[in-house]
Image 1 (cartoon, rainbow, N blue to C red):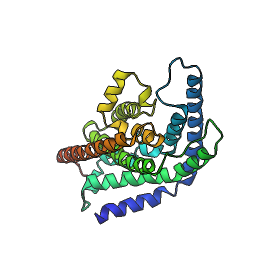
Image 2: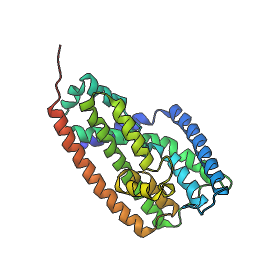
Image 3: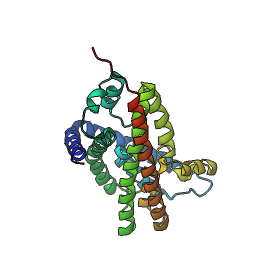
Image 4: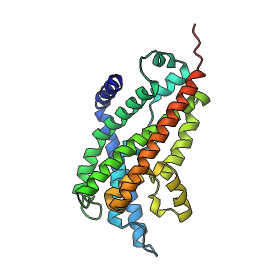
Length: 267
């Protein structure tokens, strides 16, 4: 356990040093945030039917999406891990006196936390100070805030568990491109990063509710905005825990199988 905490702390400290890249990312996320809000604002002005979310809930949802993008984007990757697998340097990782799944999990967690710490607070502060209708609103009450924090943190752990499956798949394909594209396109869409899930057709919503991706982004953001009630939030958090345990179990099982097939050639 000390080894995992150490790598988490070390990678977190390293990630916090990249402030220039973080500031550039903040500017980019503000651009995308305003663009999405303006698109939906035009949609709401000319909507024939009543939208499934109020404009206030949607704007809050979009600012949360931009603020915590490092938590929820599936295409966030560690090229160093891909190189370790594809070049054979995975041998060095196997020499470590700790479980490789837990070691990589802690490393990926630290990277996402560092990126979110540098980017989320500037976006949130500015979003709360913006004029209407672009202003982000506070949660309804303290209970909503606690449920959101719990759902967001579990969503982060769930996202890393899904990401681990991408790295494990490279043991078989020896190329990260296909896995990244497949997981990113499907995962981002069903996580509600393209459009919020309530705006999808009913048949597509049913598919989204069967997959774990929505619990990484759409679910915690709608808990914050109040679109999901407290009862539904507690039920969703329980489902998050089930998915987390299941995906970690699958990931550990798959990486053990993959490591048995690893062949490292020496010179």
